[in-house]
Image 1 (cartoon, rainbow, N blue to C red):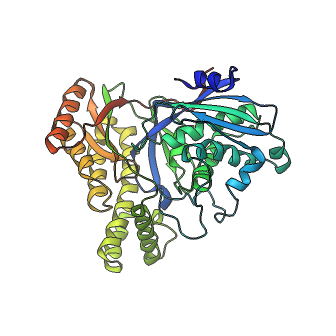
Image 2 (tube, rainbow, N blue to C red):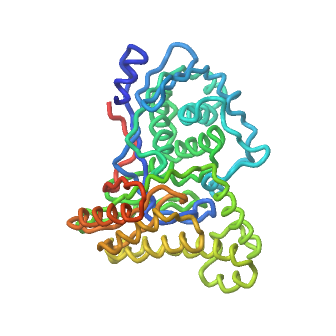
Length: 412
């Protein structure tokens, strides 16, 4: 059932419109966002749709195709669900990292079903993004959501929900917020309403997606540049290998890695690892224990790989980035230690079958890998990956190709 049909079933009326936003693949740049570094994601064709219509009262009702019952609350009750006491104000470069466990005094998650916290959190964040008087006067809404973005695969199904709801409410509530402001509202919803302190990369990638282009994002300044990928012209496909190992943004593994990055920056006497270069690594090795050093080395070299990938795309084209993708995976496997056997099998079998490069994508501990593959070799690579998973006794992966795609839009 799509969002429009669900809306009609729940409300008995037609929606005012249907808006959608994409998930994303991160081409390269993992765990660099909360270190104020660089990332290079792109929006994918898989999208989340939100059918929305305003109500005459001050209530908000959300329904989805992946939940049994709608959730309804008053707009004036959102502050009680998501109290504004959670974190010091963040500047543009202070994006929270992906999903570490929370300490005392941090967001603990709302008293509503987990899925509903995303759209309700966006409505809450948007109300706080405008003048208090205007926010309190906003009308209620009905929202119905459907999605074909795989959940738990590291393709940012959450940012797709946030983006679809944000662009719908931005139009219906006449807020006139720009895409960056909507991305910030999505991040705030995820950080403070949902209680998953992720960075802003996912929201920015979804909001700023362009066909046949990746978004180069400076996570310190939030400056962006659209970087043409040239995949289609070169006869290349990006194959997504969803391992079906579901990752979680509540794992303590994320927290440990962020703490190691912060510790490493402090030992180097810098604000964040964004300010370290490859030339600083010998000194870092002398100052740090082995684990901290390897965490630092991943972030520093990953930032450089992002810059090198942007340069390669501009000067030599997409065939020149394969080795950078593969080096990124090795760094995440060996230095950051966030891979799992299924991800390693996906990468190794894809490369053995002829992929130009491959890496895990997303926060790690599960999720998906990507492989850059010649168009006429996609079937050969997918068959090889499936055979490798079967030989290892793993659950069969879900494999599909994606292309850099457009960001949010109004579909109806």
